[in-house]
Image 1 (cartoon, protein in one colour):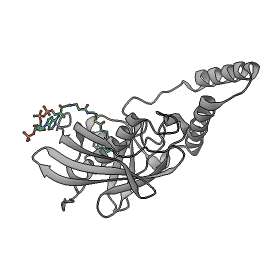
Image 2 (cartoon, helix red, strand yellow):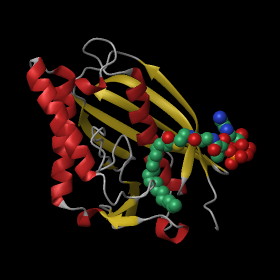
Image 3 (cartoon, rainbow, N blue to C red):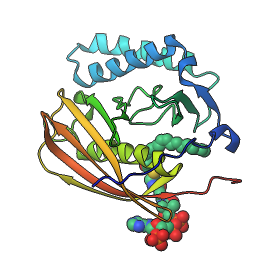
Length: 220
Ligand SMILES: CCCCCCCC/C=C\CCCCCCCC(=O)SCCNC(=O)CCNC(=O)[C@H](O)C(C)(C)COP(=O)(O)OP(=O)(O)OC[C@H]1O[C@@H](n2cnc3c(N)ncnc32)[C@H](O)[C@@H]1OP(=O)(O)O
């Protein structure tokens, strides 16, 4: 069931609550390209069969790079803002582990309004392996948590997951396109009730429901 929830007209600007906020369009293209390269590197390292000398040389190069790049760190909680398709300003954290544009570990799962709620496509490479050839159940839960949390934000502003209930219906394959959907099913006082699914080839592999609880922001 989907309820007709009026989206909040504007989310509060995290900058008003002391967070660092950068415009998504202002993120350097060189940094976004580096994030992509590191994501590819992580998958390559997890599966490489290179010989010992090659591995030792690569390890030195990577250690050197980590040292060179460890300057002017952005504070934890740095957020990005972007204009959503409906004209509202959306926020997210740049290092969110599921969709953060600057997190090389993020698959990334990008969700957009689909009329009912949110939906997005994602393919998980072998970095997210649990059982052989299959997506780790914790990552399935993480993707659902993200999709449910983001859609709750459209109804209630800032909220945290109080309860997440996941049913794993079929194995979720790696290296295969997945569709993630979520919607708001109810709002009761501070609780935003949400549900969502992950599908492969149109079939549900996992589904979840959650209770998201709206939180008071510091100073609000
Ligand atoms: C700065 C500005 C930013 C603005 C913009 C934001 C944009 C956002 C954009 C994008 C979204 C990002 C998406 C992220 C997605 C990932 C989400 C996560 O991973 S969240 C991390 C994991 N979750 C936690 O760490 C919570 C830890 N728990 C708590 O902090 C508390 O327990 C909390 C806040 C959830 C509730 O505590 P209480 O003290 O405030 O509230 P009480 O009074 O206990 O409950 C309020 C209502 O909720 C129900 N409730 C509480 N816990 C429940 C539970 N476990 N199950 C069911 N209902 C529960 C209660 O029964 C009550 O309901 P009744 O109104 O009385 O009907």
